[in-house]
Amino acid sequence: MANIKKACDPAEQDGAAQPSIWERLDTPRGGRTTLTHEGIAEAAVALADAEGLEAVSMRKLADRLGVATMALYRYVDSKDELLELMTDAVIDSTAMVADPGDWRAVFREVALRRRETALAHPWLSAAQAHVPTTLTPSRNLAVERMLGALEALPLTGDQKMQLIRALDSYSRGASDGEVYQRMMLERRGFGYDGDIRILLRSNMQWLLRSGRYPRFAKVVQDGLAPADAAAEFDLGVEALLDGLAARFGI
Image: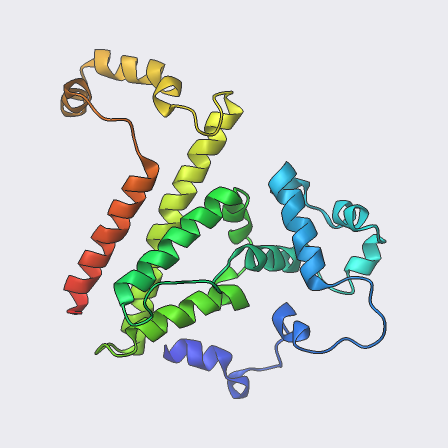
C-alpha cells in the first residue's frame, strides 16, 4: 500500500500527472455542446455489441453520432479513453441488493454481476486488456461496497484488497473463459450456446483411442454430465469465499 500511496501523492511526483478523463468530467464544460460523454459511451457500446470491438473507431463512431471526427476529440483524447468510457458504462454497481453487512453476499453479488456483464458484452474482456478499468467510477462503486462489507472485520487494508483482488481474478478469469468459448462456437457455426462436445468430438475420439491419458479417459467413459457454466461459476465463487474465510479467519 505504501507504493500506491507514494504513486498517488502529488508531492512524490516529478511532474503533475495529466488529468484523467474522470477528472475532466467533473469539470463543467462551458458553452453550448452537441455531445455528452454519456452519449458517446452509449453509441460506442452499441457499436461494439453489434459489430465487435474491432469495429469501434473514432471515425465510425463520429459517423454514428452525426458529427465530425475531430468533434469527438474535444471529449476523448484517444481510443484508450473511449475504451475507459465504454467499460465504465456497462458496469452497473448502483442497484445492488445484497445485505451490505454480509461480506459473502456482497462479494457473491459482485461476482455474478461481472459474469452477467461479460456475457452481455463479449468485447469487454478485450477492452479491459488495454485500459486501467480498475479505477473508473462504476468499478469503484463496487469496490467501495465490498470495502464497506469488510469494514467491521479485523482485517488490514492490504488484506481487504487481497480479498477483493482474489474475487476479481476468479470472476474475470471464469467469465472470460466462458466468453471465449461462446465466441469460438459462434465462429465455427454452432451458435454461442452450442454444445462444446460436438465441436470437440474429433479431438476427444483421438484422445480416447490414443491410450496416453488413461485417467482422463476413464472419467469420460464413466460418464460426464453436460457442463453447466452458471452452476460451475457459482460453485467456484462459493469455494473461493470458503477459502478466503478460512484463510483470513472471518
